[in-house]
Length: 159
Image (cartoon, rainbow, N blue to C red; front, side, top):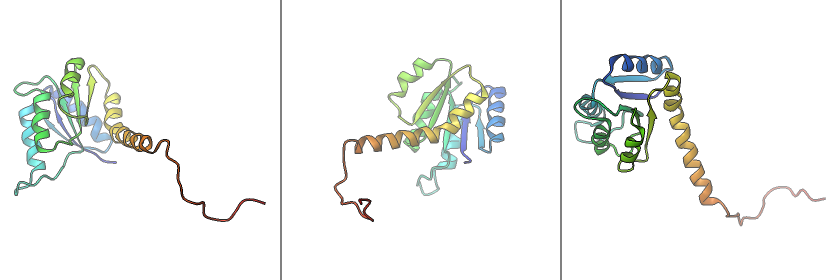
């Protein structure tokens, strides 16, 4: 499954390595150098001329510490446009970001630096799977303890 991914990373070498690894896996990747450019590009691809919202990106990856606008600030701007946008924060300050995430969304996760490109790919490609599992679990919990009241249908197996 090809994902459309927007990345905000101020270190060009890191951004290039993310882009190369994700594109090798078949994903479409746009790189921005900071939070200001990221939210501008996000709006450009997501907002239609008539003001309607058409979600474009499956995932946004944000470095937390960037010049101009950090990852949390960028996420807040993005979520003003689309409150359901999935976001992965990349940071060396995991606990700080996790505390602030509580104010944002449950559609976000944090990757602590340093990590391998393989770990990034696993997080990116595991996102849809983990969210699906979460939804299924929730659905099963809601049905837990309930039994059907319909009469069995089909040939009888007695005899």
